[in-house]
Image 1: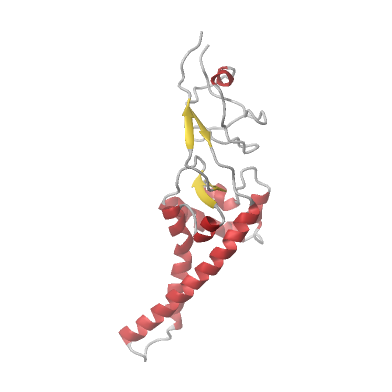
Image 2 (image 1 turned 120 degrees about the horizontal axis):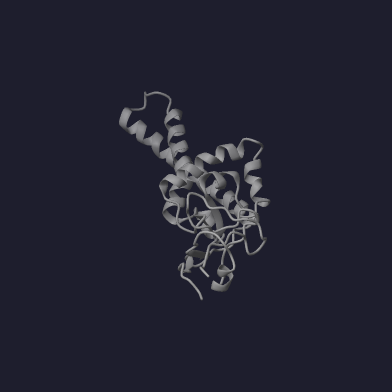
Length: 208
């Protein structure tokens, strides 16, 4: 009998869903990571061949995420204030004291630093300083790093999360994978910082 894909979650029994032909890593219903599955278990299922099963870290709790966000808000604001001060001084030196209102320069510099703070750390280090301090990191659903484009997408997706009184952020408390709305939009998950992702391969062979 051929070894075939798992059509149902081994944790809750709900059907699994594939997206664009990519391997399935999480159950869409309960958030259970498809780990620790043996070849006999796979043989008992039907469907197309599944060649990759992932050992994924557990998603981070809401308390850690809120604490990390608070620290990053402070650090980001501090960095923006420093950048604004430097920009104003640079504008005065370059253009002289009798120039346009320097507050415009300060606002532009501050907003630029705040906008770049999170995506830069997400893409480069997998987490902001606050996230690193509280032992959590950001990754794609398969455990890989984000990359600049996905980091920017997640930053922009925070706008719809914040608009309905922050409901999109609070959604992480009820979601099976701990995803807020912007995580779902960007295809990301906040997990406990552990060892790198390990995978096991079950090649589609046949059994007598």
